[in-house]
Image (cartoon, rainbow, N blue to C red; front, side, top):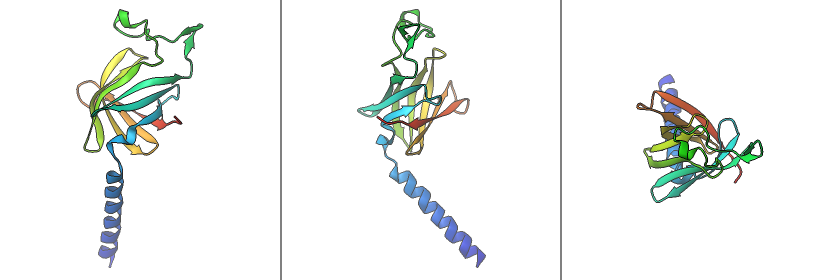
Amino acid sequence: MKVRQFASIFTLALLFTVQTVFAQSEESILGVWYNTEKTAKVQITQNGKEFMGKIIWLLEPERNGVPAMDDQNDDEKLRKRPLMGLTILEGLQYKNGAWKGGKIYDPKSGNTYSCEIKLLNSDVLEVTGYMGFSWIGRTVEWTKAED
């Protein structure tokens, strides 16, 4: 009897998991997302098969009365570009339930990392930035924001 109960519970859990995975589509990450600190909103859009994201809102859009600039960038020529409107995600492609193969730029450090995004649920993205191997990196969660 206990084996039947276990098998039934396992089957239901498996069906629920499969249904959740299939309910996700490649367009599921489209929209506006808060970064982890909620200091910026990133709008994720699709261009063909690739996904990209740009900063559309900043908690502190100005520093000392001047628009916040990309002043941490390693490239001196890029330090004068404003953070507002800056593309920080690019080249992501949907494959096997995740968005992979792209890059993410971190304006705080001025570094660009390989990127992978997973949808944890309709309101939470798991964003991983890494150099070299995906298991050696940093993972943060972004939350859905109003458009």
